[in-house]
Length: 210
Image (tube, rainbow, N blue to C red; front, side, top):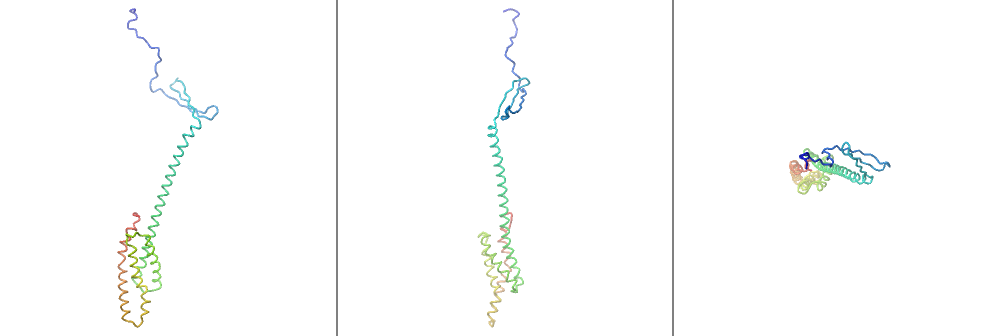
């Protein structure tokens, strides 16, 4: 080996590898028939092109499951919204029915403050009886509402029918006096009954707890 060859570097004839970060260009177009989507990928400024063809069948296999998922989510959201609306409507209906019973009892109770046995006052007895019967299905047994209203009904019945019972006892002054005394006792029970009834109904008339 000659002195001229000493220290001389040998250069490889292998092409230099393009540095990382070479730009990639992507372009989409239709093929000549217009039936397929062609994706052209170009590497670098002077790199070779690579074509990738996507057929309509492939597109359908991709888009149909995606569309189905979107529809399923939309249906689930709508169903959940309808369920919430139905639940709120049920709560409102239950509250209204319970409050109607309370209002009916309250209206009947107020008449005993000035009870005279008039036809208008006695006419409230029938709606009250209906409210007592309905409370069996509207309030749970543990509330104690039904037994209390049934006791209210027994006391009110004595007062509502007092005039008829008294008229049938003409000339029986002692018995009429005893009957009148019992009427006062029944009326006092009714007049003092509302705080107890409110305590029993109050937990079931709170809308936020229904």
